[in-house]
Length: 260
Length: 275
Image 1 (cartoon, rainbow over the protein chains, first blue to last red):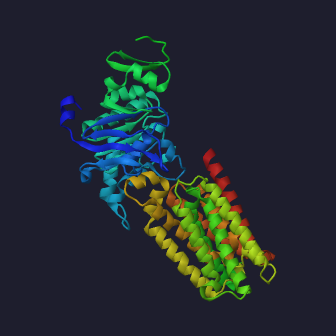
Image 2: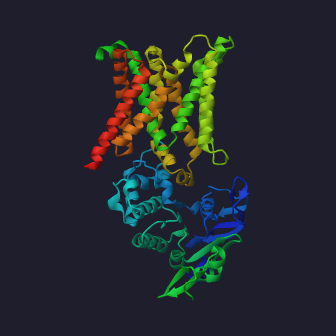
């Protein structure tokens, strides 16, 4: 998203003084953030900083203790949620196609069976993430990258306007990570708004268009280069962090062994 | 063997129906990792029977309170709502709450039954009285099992979705707790309908062992359920016949047969895995 288009983009989701937490206890300072139409926002921060909770609040699964989380043009917003893979290490005997079909069950309706059209739609979503040939394979037998693409296909099967991903590349090797990020890039180019929670600072720096950095003082949101600075990251993580440019990419290094 | 089965046909039919109902629901019990919910519900159900017997022995049973079915249903329903609606807001871990319900219901049943004249009533609660199933009980079981299987057929995709990925289901607008309560209600219905005849031990084992047998032999959810149901009904028939032939208690004989089937399924799965 260019600066000009961002200026014109309408906010889809607005956090206004939103205090998020569980059992009456806040886990984040008040948030004032807007997710814009066509956004590609990365949410980063230390463990336990509340990144996943923000995703859950967007979907209405967590109500703010104070303030508000509002969906503008709520009737046009359809969420596609891609949870952390480890949450689904379950042993259920489901094929990849069964998992993808879950993404459109709300459209199938209660007491009705999925039709051929629904199956075709699930197949198209699998094609978009390049896993159609794995449709009949047990989900548990897939590699980490294949599972992740299946979960993205499941989210796509629901025809989302906003895709929410929770650590989509955690524990993956370079090729799988690259494949996932390419898929996300294509989806974003196709007009889907994306919010991605991750610990991978280098991925965020070179993939998303904006970043939200979560810390004890709240959230800093802005263009990647403005937010992901050595000073800010070192202060937040409590270890030396250097942000350097290498062959046009931003590289974030831990340990302070490389001077900028 | 067939003569034995024919001679006790109502009891045999009742056992097979209990096995069928428990084994289908049991697939969810095992995959959702709520084995102890089923154990606690079975124990609560038996505590309800014990409470009814106790009140009746004191001459306090009036109207529905006199009915073992009513008291068993009441306590089981309480358990279904308690376990189905529990959120993550409680500071006491879920398995600890299950353990508390299980031991208190078990101890309550023993204490109440110990005050009831009639000797080995507690042993009966534990191991049941399959041979005592008559035509009326068999028909009632047929009705309950048909209803439970019907609910599972109609809402299969919803039960699987909310069980497999409750957060995703919630994000799609599914009322996960309501679906969980409905699923637990089907479990509770089977337990209440079976507990007096089958006893805690048999009901609990039929909720777990056949499903694990199915997991060893099936590759899809449908085939796991089919293997679970098939092995459970087969265990009920074989265990029943063996118990009558060898003059053994019927419930434990069915449990043991189910255990043998599980061992065979495990062995088959190992052989297939190696190939």
